[in-house]
Length: 80
Image (cartoon, rainbow, N blue to C red; front, side, top):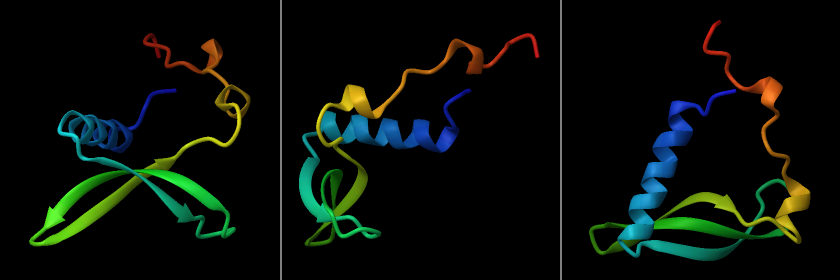
């Protein structure tokens, strides 16, 4: 399984924002559930206004319980 181009581009944007000191952690409400989420945002400017671009939220509790590493059987096979 390969990482799609749009995800790579978003990650590069996130890295640039971090290098420039333009990241924010915002408390937001989940659009579907209304639950509180702590969202990582890049901060930009539009004239005199600030623009916050959300990239994702922090995992609740132990993030090791929320995610599984990629399975070796799901990786791209260069021979195919």
